[in-house]
Amino acid sequence: MKFFVDTADVKEIRDLAATGLVDGVTTNPSLIAKSGRRFLDVVAEIASIVPGPVSAEVAATDHPTMLAEGRKLAKIAPNIAVKVPLTVDGLKTCKVLSDGGTMVNVTLCFSAAQALLAAKAGASFISPFVGRLDDISAPGMELIADICQIYRQYPHFKTEVLVASIRHPLHVVDAAKLGAHVSTLPPNVLRQLFAHPLTDKGLAAFLADWASTGQSILEEPIEDRRALAQAR
Ligand code: E4P
Image (cartoon, rainbow, N blue to C red):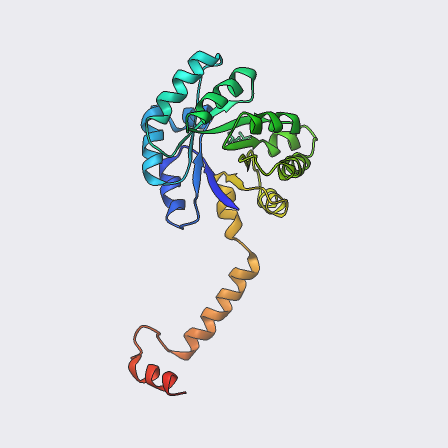
């Protein structure tokens, strides 16, 4: 499963990209507004930090303007994925951009029927929002299961299932069990994936026992030990 980070906070993206575990970034107009920065500046900077797909969302709702905005965003960097909402005009725009070789992320997907349309329109990514469905007592993960099942029936579909609106680590684990291609994670959720109290407890015990030996790995010479290991 690929991990994208769902933020327009460049400092967070740099920190997390340093782990080597970040495959892409998703932004949306709300995240751009939160960053307080100029949209094109922040998207260009993110695209220079992360080599994988960086989603940048159009602001128009009519096809001609969406297309013009999408083409402009795509010119910023080759790893820009133009994000369009799942509307008739959005999918018309998706089809034209995809046919022209631009990556498109179709967002605000809340049904399997919508996901089927996005695949037919040639989307690179479909973004079903699991957290927002859970919020209204509709199980978001059931939508991921349905989309993965449908896409598997049609191997010519190249659309990747990008699980969005993730709220906690269990969303990620459940999406991975279903075979979803990508999870886009708020930075705090990505950090939560690393954490387990037994890891912290176990490490503390190992470090205490190691300290009691009084040894240092870096201060020990290695040559004699290599010869000993190779002689066996
Ligand atoms: C990602 O592409 C979406 O814009 C994002 O995951 C939405 O998450 P939210 O429901 O927490 O706003």
